[in-house]
Length: 211
Length: 211
DNA sequence: CAGCATCCGCTTTGATACTG
DNA sequence: CAGTATCAAAGCGGATGCTG
Image (cartoon, rainbow over all chains, first blue to last red; front, top):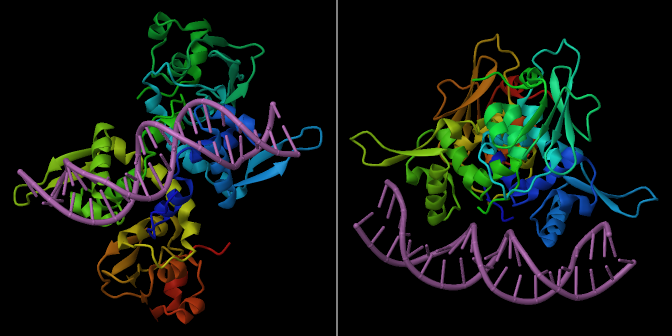
């Protein structure tokens, strides 16, 4: 990226991470840890492969990403965030939090990966009754199932099915996320095709307080 | 900007504010409040005027900026952040904080405006002895003078000269900021041409604790 | 198959000039 | 003051090809 040539800490930050796709690559590495090239490409639907290669080199030059060889059985290069790269976490969280309301508008064309739920869930949901026994909620949004877990007052996203879920939500990503965050009313979502099996109080337990 | 077409809150945020120059326009409006077009252009050295016009229209369409007519005596349009635009403050702070270490490398070519110091000062400096009488430090970095003020344990940037400054720093932006943040040693900075008039303890009072 | 590099058409940006 | 208009240069997207 061409530098802004301004002696300002925000402009300097954008000189490094302001390029198209750069912060989304950091997102993938933050959410999934060390990744192979092909894992990154899969987590970044729409990126041109030459751009991914370019950005990874730039991130390496800037000291945000390091490349390492995977342990012997696997013949692959792994890309991993450096400590300086991980320091971007709070900035990514702030941006992702700001973006949550933008998830309300639907766009069926948009790509989706289950681990992307991590931001809205971590940043927006909370266990309102942390003293009670923990619960899990299973989410089925098309590809592999995910589930939520209450941990110490927070709500976490995990891969795979839940063992004894208090509820199971099946529908489009927007329906499922909409119902979880309260952006979408459960009755409306059901009318739109969402399937909710289980107790409704499980949902209310983790929803943010209504404004 | 072309959308990333990903159902992810970070990607959605970047769809809105990921374009080149966009966040710097938000910076200007955050730091200076409502601005005229020409004020913005002055605070964004390097921007092409057609791009500024384009971005302002996009920001208006996205609901982050509103345009209003200044009160009668002045014949001018003012651009102001909406509430939704102001919600970007914490994201800007996080990015600007991440960028502070990047201010250590020098580049004499870079443009500078005094109010850009607000980020590093607000986010990095603090009054270590808030119970003592407040002090001011004057900064002269080329154009108009600025000064720092201790307020309730924080350090604030103000325009104009100080009345009875505990110290006056005169030098390049990087020298002055480097000495304030401790990135640059006072003796080294003096050797490089910085002029420091006043008590050194004023400096130590607001510097961050050394790591 | 993993990890790129090349080519090409299209879009965005930058620099400058001009206008109500 | 607050923009348009114009045009060259840079960046991006998509397809494809290459190499260990």
